[in-house]
Length: 404
Image (cartoon, rainbow, N blue to C red; front, side, top):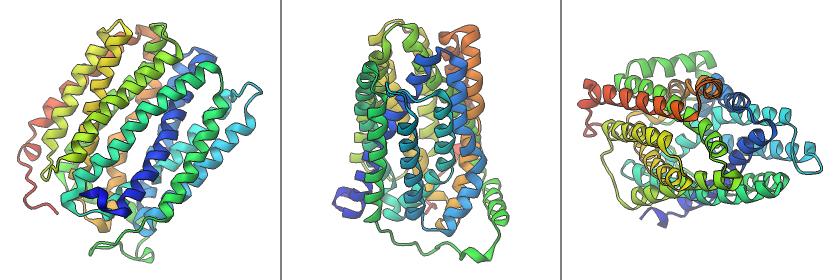
């Protein structure tokens, strides 16, 4: 049982607390922009500001992860995020509302930290458990993540309704302190194919090695390019959700319930993956889930009542957990530990490179044609790309028998 491993439990607790703060802050960030400006274009630009540096700096971050202790990298990232939260508290008005410009500054800082934080977290997870426990460990961590998606948005929605933005900004700062404390007590054994010494290659050479490895692995190319489109669709939907809440006149509390529904559905799915031991995850499982997600996006665009929106978003949350549990488990099996940081950073660029463009463009497109049509098109596109990738030979013939 994975929860008998004290090391993993410590990592799990830190992830839970940090995720709770993130869930609160991201909802607040979106709602503060909507309340202050009412502009979908501004909201899309803010989200793009957070995504863009992650794409620009991911390759460099991956090289650093293979040279440095991923745990220390994560701790440094959390320390910078904590400082960013304190900055927002310092510049907030007497009503606790930060100026819009400060939100863009923090979004830029968060995106920059994400460029290294998520590759570091992925690599550290690879060292925490044995390959047969990858799905179970990812599922257990998704339980933490999805539970925070229930509690965080609901709490943030109530605080936003009362105007106490400074309260949950301060709470978010505290969560990063807890995460740093937990990471301090996490230890991980290096695998046999441990990273090469830092002096053996330049940063540029390390980035080139990661790119070359991906290009020579057709499965990574296909799944990453499919994820490029899928993540663009998901990014568009995430921009549309607060605007859908505004369109339905449900207020910040209704928006909180909508986001919490994502967490409830995700928590149910995460519990399933935490309990079962899916030893042989495959890319086809991921693509089936993304195709189903596209169907749900179309249904979301058709929904006209809060109750139905909540139900559909709960289903989206469940499907997202399947995607975010199975896909990383496949990557952990096929990417050697010695190059994991470099390779996973390249796949992150490929998979997430569409997000800044999608977020920036979706805000403008929503302003032109409305929320519902955008949701319909996002769903249809996700169904199409998932279907095509599902039948690509390298995906169809994938077998875990020879993967480590």
